[in-house]
Amino acid sequence: MEPLNWTELHARQDRIFDWLRSMGLDKHHRLKAHRKNIAEILHARESGRYEEFRSRLSEVDQRERLWSICESVEFVDAMHPLLDEQPNGIQRVLEEALQGPVDLFAESETTNRGRNATFEIVVGGLLARAGFAVEFRVNPDILTEYSGRPVVIQCKRPFKPTSVRRNFFEAGKQLRRDLQGHQNALAIIAMSFSRLFNAGNKIAQFSTQEEMNTSLHMDLRRAAESFNGTLEQIKHYGVSGAFFHTGTPAYISTANQMTFRQVGAMTHVAASKNETSLLQAVAKLVKM
Image 1 (cartoon, rainbow, N blue to C red):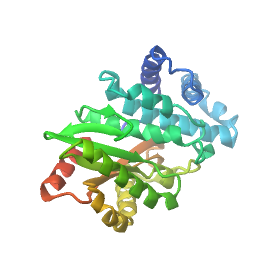
Image 2 (image 1 turned 180 degrees about the vertical axis):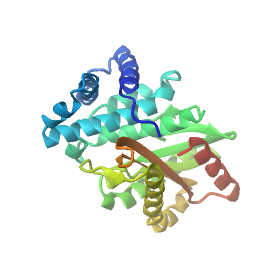
Image 3 (image 1 turned 90 degrees about the vertical axis):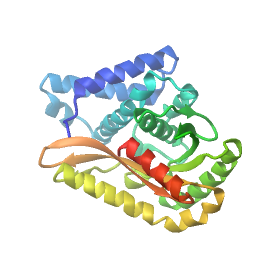
Image 4 (image 1 turned 135 degrees about the vertical axis):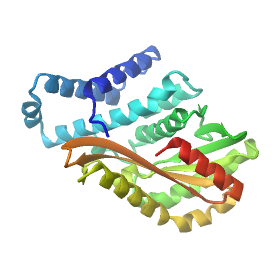
């Protein structure tokens, strides 16, 4: 695991910002604030005054800058493989994704649409990085193809634990409608547990990278398995599989290093033996 390269992150962020400016999407407050925060951190580090800079920040300001780092890394990584392709529908979903409060902890059920849309970009970016041609739509959220078959994906990012079951049923019903227009398609629910794992006010701490990877994968699997009963109940909608995802800031104590880690897990729902193999192949290509 390489330490965070601040100069590279800022440069990649600038490239994306220039692209967004060309589409008139550079005026959103959250994006501008993240960019400003990263520039301030980079300047403080380059001038050797980072600890002094950090000591002057309030708890709220420190938390905001933490999430500026995390969300910038996630957004840059997701957008990088999409820049050259500029898939259909990307401008519409970006207009939604750039909305919302700068501080994740300040997010509410009425202001979470921006980060919900960002999750669609994250999923699309993971697929594009793996070589899939993606298209952003309204229903399904993402359309792609694998092994000669359409793949329809509905993305959900529950705001609270009690919303997960409802989100699964909502996505199942949406996929049932999507399948009417895409015959022989693989139907996947992409479910983000990021908000459930971290509401924005904590940092996961681990001794080593290996401990972090093992722990986060285990926690995600355990959380996914707790909804096995719900997945059984939505089989009749024709859902092939569910892709679970989370992203969280983490501190590695032995390396004295801050990082942002994403993990994912695919599970079959109503998939046939052949479809299960296809789902496993997709998950392997995404490499999470």
